[in-house]
Length: 348
Image (cartoon, rainbow, N blue to C red):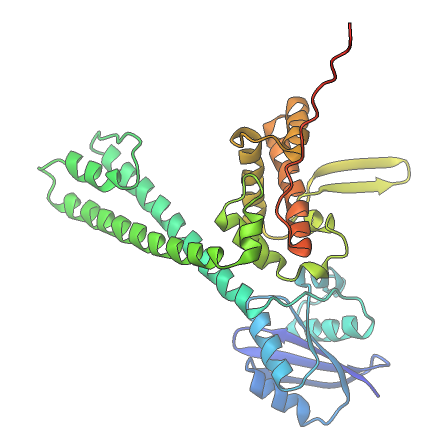
């Protein structure tokens, strides 16, 4: 008889529930959140395990890979959709969640999440580390400007290199205690700039060595960060049946409500990666406003901009670029600009 295992994961402890193909609970237990101990706990039961399910989360990638090394049929399921399935239960407990996951797997009421490759995980971590440093740098700049305003000092806009010199030049000599604090923030700012520059060089080196990234950078408005972020988010382009599904996967398609005679379209769903969605929207804006070369995508976007404004046009262009970039990954071809149709001159 086949059995189905539901794992409710927490940082320290994992709750285990096993049901058979008839939906009868045959085992409940707990184990430390460690793949080796979970594997030992399951194998000592000597059951025919068909599937082991756990919700997507920060630990899921590591747990899935390690459990598969122990020859266990572990799968990662979409936590957002599983939450709707578990919400029908009156009591929210770890035991009930594990039971609900096992029951969902038995009844095939789940959506499996694709596991990213180790390379995609590592490059994604590198890009996120850079993003964190950039965010901290912006916070330091705002803090320094705010502290200086207390003394009536208002800094004008300046570049990255000029900022420390400008701050030190305007610091009043009379300040002794506060000066040391602001100086320490400026030193941290300089250190952050150096670390960001080192990460930029590393990311650029990785991008220049990747043929797919170089092809994606032929798209107008797409730089190395956007290209690498798109590739690691998609990872395996063959997991999408249609390229247009990528737009919906990234949450760049409108919500729909249709019931009877009522049909409404709302704003974009904003599912998926918010960081990549922002990068694609910025790429769409650059394609509309900064790209000088004519392309069919830009011409299409300009029509939308004249009718609905630049904001909606940028999102629409971003979605279309995502579809095009997916085709580039599949077909291994550069971006095609197309030829501008010249208006026909009528004979007199």
